[in-house]
Image (tube, rainbow, N blue to C red):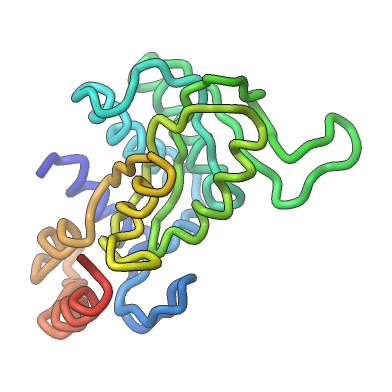
Amino acid sequence: MNQYKIDFIEFMVRSGVLTFGDFVTKSGRNTPYFVNTGNYKTGRQVFMLGEFYASCLMENIENGSITKDIAALFGPAYKGIPLAVSTASALWNRHNLDVNYCFNRKEEKDHGEGGKMVGYKLKDNDNVVIIEDVITAGTAIRETLPQLRAAADVNIAGLIISVDRMEKGQGEKTAIEEIERDFGIKTYPIVTVREVIEVLYKRPVDGKIFITDEIKEKMEEYMSKYCI
């Protein structure tokens, strides 16, 4: 496992973003763990977050999975907005790659420049990478794509997410597999839930063990029900 993945998992628990307990996902599933990027709140955290997303993006550019010719990063409102901005900043600072970014408004602006999109003005045939937090059933992406494609006839070069929960979507395939099947979009996670378990099970971070035998059992039970 690449070191940036291990560092990212530790970073999430230290930031209170990856937590364990009893939660309900957006898709209505009761889950023993939760990833909430809304808990990032400091300059240091958002700086580091951009570094991790940029590392994942660059890894997939270098191995040929994602094209080098990226016109823009798109961050779906609201959580995707700081993710796209911090990733674009890290790409410039760390990799000398200057990439545009843009994001959508939840409600269309009817004054000033108007419209639903902010930032880079998308053009037909642009290669766009979507920067998102986490996919459970793919609900948020399905809501976002029509808005993105209404702006221009763009090519979605990839979708970068923080954690692949490896869960079923609306059928028997994972949400990620359904997104590829329905929209032709490949998803590239920084880490998977299996990697989270591998790194944190009985392994302390700052003296605390986050995945005990009990938590692991609950996660395995949940995954046997919802994951592939």
